[in-house]
Amino acid sequence: MLNMESCVRRVLNGEVLAHAEALALLNLPDTDTLRLIDAAWQVRREYFQDRVKVNVLLNAKSGICAEDCHYCSQAKGADTDIARYRVMEPQEMLAQARQAEDLVAAEEIIKSAFATDVRPLLWKVRSDLNLSDPADPLRGFAESGYAQAKAEERGVGGGAGLGA
Ligand code: SF4
Image 1 (cartoon, protein in one colour):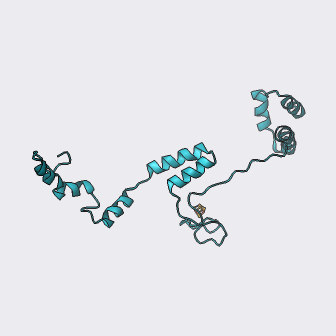
Image 2 (image 1 turned 60 degrees about the vertical axis):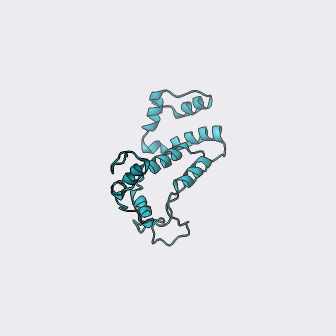
Image 3 (image 1 turned 135 degrees about the vertical axis):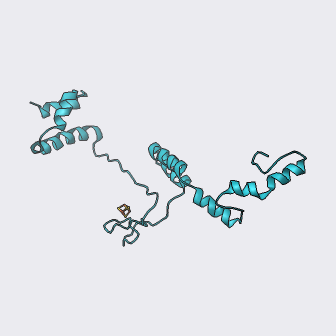
């Protein structure tokens, strides 16, 4: 039979509970929940007093979620006072994660930036610049004659290939 008072006393004396005791605490029946909360409170109070840790969430995007779940304050149609902004630039998210010393978030941001498909953006930039064949720049380059012209200009043999 687990003696909770003994567990508390020993932990407060700096002992570490045995694995089996910790497991027994986790497996206590619901009827012991209040006793368990009281025991945890005694330990918390001893080690942390009234200190609290505040975690702040930073949303990559806020207030304009297109899924529009009607119960959610993040939904684009929600009538709330929360900030509304489009997806932050990875650099900005990274700066915020660094400021919060959140290495896990920083890693996630770098990974998501790495995994982001930038092809639609590149296609738009190429289109805006009126480059030939914005959907396939390599083909556009090969068909442009640029490589051939440069090869002739330099007096070297070359075709329309990329390596010319
Ligand atoms: S719950 Fe909120 S944040 Fe999640 S998908 Fe729905 S609207 Fe978007």
